[in-house]
Length: 333
Image 1 (cartoon, one colour):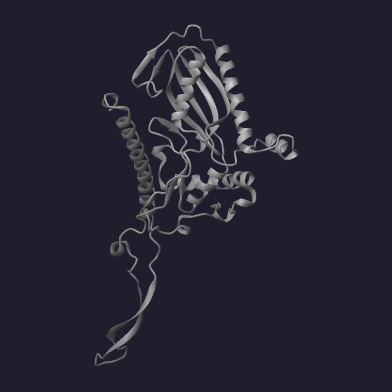
Image 2 (cartoon, one colour):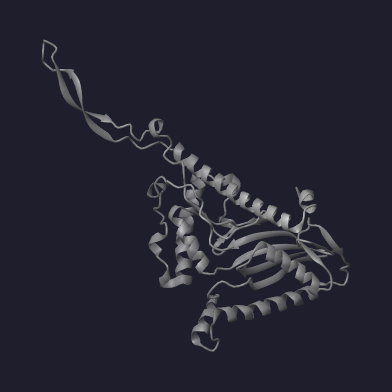
């Protein structure tokens, strides 16, 4: 598919990539929903409710075989799967900060009432961690390694010290921007305490803000960066690699973007695609609930309704069969 995209115009190519992103998101959520619903429906169904019916039968002790109506308790089959079908066919699922088709890593999904917490996560302006791999010596039209080649350059003059100097300048400029978008007076005690706790956040939507960036590995032409940021898109991170190359008097493309942390969710707590089943998902929700409550309460304070958070006693029965299969659009990137 890449050669096909390379032969198309920029506008058509952008539309196709956008459509692929939406299809990728939809397929991902559908697989998740099907996995959960299959697990729910595979469980042993609850005992059917009993109802009283008057059945016609012979009267006890009668030699003439007289018939009479007798009150009898029989199971109600109204909710039986063979009558009304599977109990769980739809599930309300929302997506947090998105990952495009060329990125990998932590992707947060909300299930049932947990979808409301995605908005709280967005309002908390939590940072995210990425590992970004770059390649010196060439430039492409979309900042990706497999994009249409625009330019080739030399990189023999690039050293680790020069790269670290550029990264320090980028981090410093973004930290100043973070203070500006937070509208805080740094001379106040409140601002000092927030800075010590690492809670300085922009009040509203802002451009991409980098709170930390460093080089993890440098072996020209390859280098690996660790980036802590907020309000970003993966395309902006690829463009960042391109701009770093220009600052180093050469060019660079991005070969990999991987999200290692989204707020308080890390790779250690993430489920692989092969682990998307009812048991693992339910265990992950129960394990994450206390941390979600703690971190959101620390970031949002009284604005957060902690009653919406699932507890360790949370169960799928509390959600009930959903009547809607419309995946919620995630709040934010």
